[in-house]
Length: 163
Image 1 (cartoon, rainbow, N blue to C red):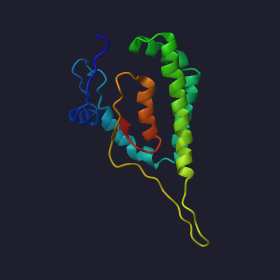
Image 2 (image 1 turned 30 degrees about the horizontal axis):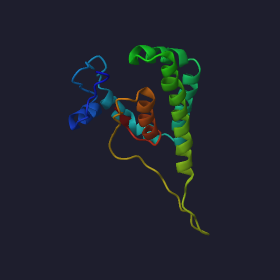
Image 3 (image 1 turned 120 degrees about the vertical axis):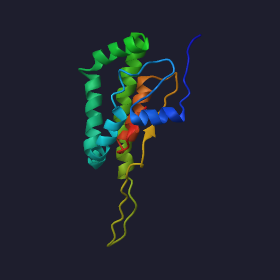
Image 4 (image 1 turned 180 degrees about the horizontal axis):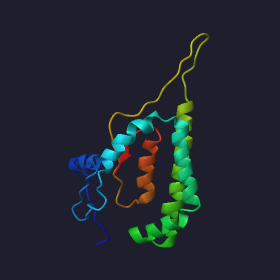
């Protein structure tokens, strides 16, 4: 057998929101510290931040991943996901850093798109987050870079996201 997979169910979604994810073969009890509730608690503060402030968080994360955090993240990826160094470098460093930076760029492009205004009228589009929770379930063949991209692309636009 090369791999096993778990099909995400409605119960998995509710468990992720509550921060109590259950898996048929993996014990997540050490990680279940009510993370979903903590994320919901911080959602209002995150959504109230300017988009530039949210973008700065992601750009700082990309900068740290390309600098002082690169080796610890690579080591954790090699150990935690049974990858070789080459695979970890692609997944944990290169693609994740690119995703974080590209998501900031694409968010900027979206926010700059505004309706045309005529003389004496200022038309302005204000983007607001979805109401609710984005549940991002990754395919079994994808690892940390895709998982983090799914969370970050919705988070930069003020949306609460998790897996």
